[in-house]
Image (cartoon, rainbow, N blue to C red; front, side):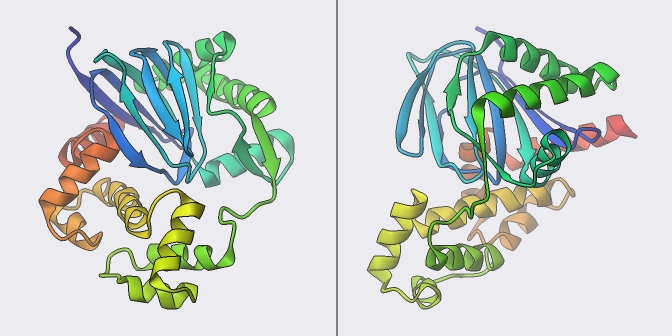
Length: 275
């Protein structure tokens, strides 16, 4: 049995985040990210549900998750998971698309799980260089090679709004602007000009989760940013609208894979290395 390892590195040069989980058994409940995820599984078959579609991922499978794609996964046969992922913000991806393709359109991955040995080899090498804090020309070259290969073969380019309807977009905007406050269903009903029941039904059909779950996951994404600034965990929990620190910690670990404290320590260690 491998000793469990969890690692997160933010590469300032490339402006991307890389996570590595080795020897873990954890399942991840339904959640979304506000960034692109390019991940690969070296060991530990997993069942992934993304946007209501189920995938059984084998070793060497590559995952492509778009911002706001709702997904969850769990292990098969209690096998240990060895997983690495690159996280790219929407802003960085937009800049890359403009630089590589001279286009200002939005990127949408059109595949969720792929098996591509050529791409996997490059992803493994790139993630190794990033996780080992290597500053080389090779790392930057690999990053562009990986992105160009991915975008040419597994992505569509479109001008689109993330929300299918204006009403639900307005509700999401309200949740995101007021995530640190108490929000009631009555508040959302007025924003969306819908009855409470129809708001829940339409929102869930459109986004794949309820308004409350959307709010929780948005709070977690904001909490990550605050933790990087070394704010106390209690302060972050309060500012993000959680009723208590315990609830915040449990949800954070279930969603991100590590506790808020572990997340903060990893980033502090990274900053110390960069000084």
